Length: 563
Image 1 (cartoon, rainbow, N blue to C red):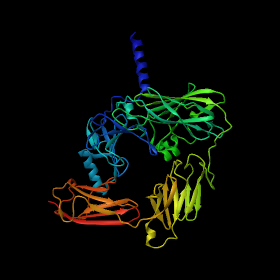
Image 2: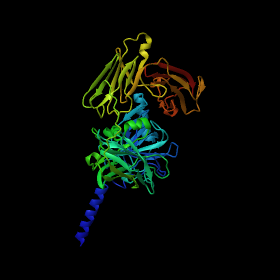
Image 3: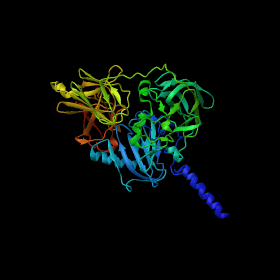
Image 4: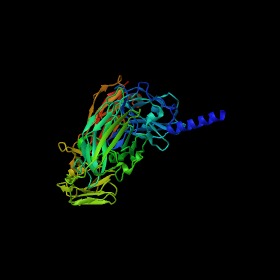
């Protein structure tokens, strides 16, 4: 009897671990407030999946950020963009937690960072402390929440990564978020896949009429179809106490009760995150600002999110048949919404065909492509795109028309402008710009120059042209003026801007000594903290040099006093 009980317990524990192999009581929440999310794991973002949880900080900065578990600081990164001030802690069980958009670090971490910033004379820095340098105890305050980097509002970005640096959903580890709401469905679409397929007498993508019912159920008006068909859905989830449109956990489909495909947003790797644009209908997103998640796998789609895919998720509809296609959408707390789509097989001879614009140039996925006209060349490496297609390519008066930005690009391609026909000093101030469809505004595209060739690399099709930047950056003091006493001030603040090509770099010195100034690109501010104790003289000569992306430079000098 005793042996039987032990065997039963062994089998039960083995089964439980197999169901959830992630430790449930190792990591704690990184904030001491109720957790409310503005973003969920793997939710769909611009050109990537979100790699963590975005935790609201009650619309304020400066909340204590607590380590999720003991470990050591393995990486510190400070950048103007991205995660801003970010901290990485490696734990004894091999996982790493990440904390982003921080306002500042704890004192012992801040001291190490400041020392290295002054040694290297740079605000942006990346450090990799060894395992004995910055050990972290359980429940230790490691930082304070903020809004640094590419953050749109104060919040904490929190990640858990495995030993292979793959992000996982922190909710798998017992990080609890209250969520009693079922996912919402905004739209359902059908896709005829080949020339003979059709949906409601159309060979193009068709939006289906969605009918909301009770308790998270939806129905779709009867679909008349024939041939190989795929479906797509627009959906999101909302947790309790938040109105944000967040991502879902999984999507499963079936056809006449048989499984077709499952998309599981549990884990992904950073080298595949850009292929989000193969999951969604990219053209629809660029034209309608809404992401349709395709429930089928197209060629050249390397995403690892798919499971149990039967015929890559497509269905085959035969003439004179009646079928049911179902979609189950689940959030991270197990709330499920279901969509039922009745499909009637009707072969039609009166099909509205998909229009394909034929141009002079054709791009093959598995071949590099060179395009040239007048003073412009474009080079696409092989596998720049996912599909072969006719590309619109034209050059007129230094303006390149390179299709419309409605086709997803999976690697950088290269645009070169020959500027040998330009003369004079203005030639040195030329740059390559993308042209927006709204008011034809120019946006600087990172440009390099070699002899008479300007080059840029980009992942976006569209219109490009040459721009000229003759204006110097602007530098304006915020809280002081020339000759002012600043003894009672903790911070020295300036505003910098460059309307045409943007700020490339800046440098500030006091009495010839480099001082650290934190740059917030969202506000356009430079801030020095006098607590760094670099400014020690009574009379101080401040010199700030700011340079834009074509080399225009401005110098700002004042005298200020401190005791």
